[in-house]
Amino acid sequence: MDEEHLMMKTIAAVIAGLIAWILVATAVDLLLRALWPNYHQAEIAFNFTLGMMMARLILGAVSSACGGFVVASITKANSTAVNITGAALLVLFIPNHYLLWHKFPLWYHLTFLIALFPLTMLGAKLKARRTER
Image 1 (cartoon, helix red, strand yellow):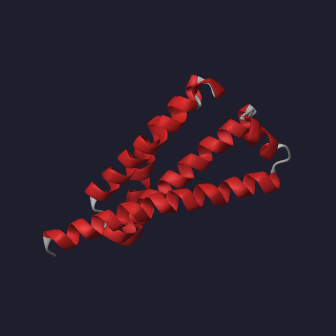
Image 2 (cartoon, rainbow, N blue to C red):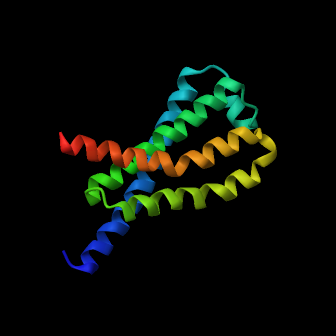
């Protein structure tokens, strides 16, 4: 495979991984709204209970792992693409968390942001293990 083709595949994989993150997060968020009374009102006001914050962290974890899985599916575990995706998620979410810093406790922000990169890598590793079988 030539370098240009590899670069295009890497770019496509990163974009697909980010889109997968958004789609999974949106689907899980809609599910939370449908199944959890008062969740939607809490979401509008950013007035979450501890359980709701934990659910949102799980939403982020599942979305990150799915994003990494998609990237690895496209690139056959190209670690560069997975690393770029994890870094891109971090870069995209830091400004949002900065703006919302006063709405959530410190542990929430740190847990979400610190977990983005490793959970993306985990999703890619899960794909690699699945491919090996």
